[in-house]
Amino acid sequence: MQGKFSSNEEERFQVRKLEILDKSKGFIELLQQLTVCDSVSDKEFQQRFQELSSYGDDHLICVIEDDRSGKIVATGSVFIEKKFIRNCGKVGHIEDVVVDSCVRGMQLGKKIIGFLADHAHSIGCYKVILDCSVENRAFYEKCGFKPKEVQMVKYFT
Ligand SMILES: CC(C)(COP(=O)(O)OP(=O)(O)OC[C@H]1O[C@@H](n2cnc3c(N)ncnc32)[C@H](O)[C@@H]1OP(=O)(O)O)[C@@H](O)C(=O)NCCC(=O)NCCS
Image: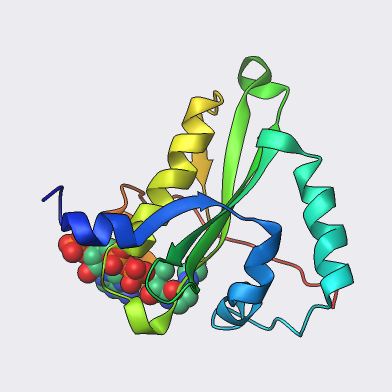
């Protein structure tokens, strides 16, 4: 046993970077559990994938593939913002975190957040931040985050 995971579960649910073949493993359907996400054509997916890849370590999307079903069951992303303040510091922005409803409560969300936060830390960010609903506050607190100030938004569409 390591933490709350049995060694079987550790093997079954490993975090890795998004790969181009993940579209055929249910990646878009998983995002649809988070928010509005219309179908994305293979061409659109490829173009966006290449674009994001060109940012290198400054944009990371990670996934967990269920080793048993071959389906993508969890994902999240982190974008690295480069600043002038804080001695030209860097900040990680975590976005689009979702775990398949069939496997929630199995520490996969925590695993995703840990992976993204470790990435931001490893490339020198002084902090990592995210927005969330009131309902998810307790989850992020379990992941080591604390509330700070308020979230503001202006939608264009
Ligand atoms: C929020 C979400 C990502 C959590 O994923 P998960 O894999 O079920 O969470 P975990 O199993 O890793 O939970 C880690 C800890 O947080 C707790 N937790 C998880 N969700 C919680 C909630 N909504 N309220 C209170 N505690 C919660 C768990 O009980 C667990 O506690 P423990 O470590 O003491 O056992 C998942 O419920 C989800 O995808 N929800 C829909 C999409 C969404 O809201 N995404 C977030 C956008 S900001």
